[in-house]
Image (cartoon, rainbow, N blue to C red; front, top):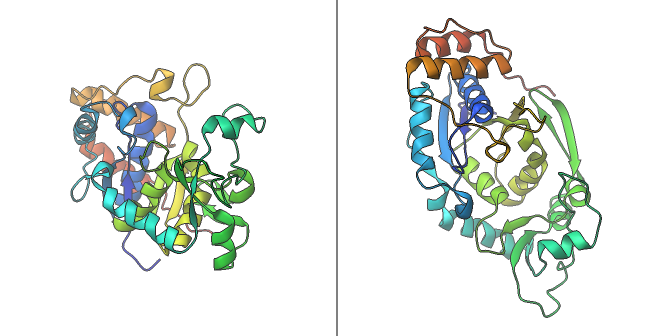
Length: 300
């Protein structure tokens, strides 16, 4: 890409880091260090109703205890609203964003939705609100792709998963940029901040892979660069579901060097890296794994 490698870890402070989130944190840190790059930390706290007070600062402390120290200041998305508003206005001015009056119930009641999948937005408000009050703002995916001469199918190459593709208009529909409650949508905030922080490589959990096509469409609409993507393996709970705060994941114990090292060893093994002796200092273990970590490829 002709740029210095810059990666990031971007947790949501809906609770403390757990074993699953540490895998993504460690992979992104190692990938940056293996490329002699920079590693940024961004707190994705735009969904304020779900954020746990104090969790943001506690996450920073957990990472420090693990030796995962960011380069440069920590960013908080809750402080970035003007940048998101400017991006939305750019899309509105281009005729690529429109207000929507539909509730989630309206959308889901119009179709059968499989478990763990969101309903595809059918474009109900694309031609106007029909006298209803505006609730959210959406991206007109087809209008963006037509104006830019892009194929309806978005293609990208994941450094771990290989070639990927998605027809966003058919599989997702016109997605939300600003929510009905006035909060900024994840997709817009992530795209704007990745560009603002100069992120060249995104390493994150495989559960977020499905967001990639939407983010690429939005990057193109805003004239922003597309990073390279790598999605890490998921850690699953006893019920087979992705380990998460909602799925009973316990907060990482980083209160002692031994506990921190045990957490790092577990995450490293998920990434296919060998465990190191329990008494190894975190910094030494991280240096060891950096030398072993596979260089991120850019297959074509």
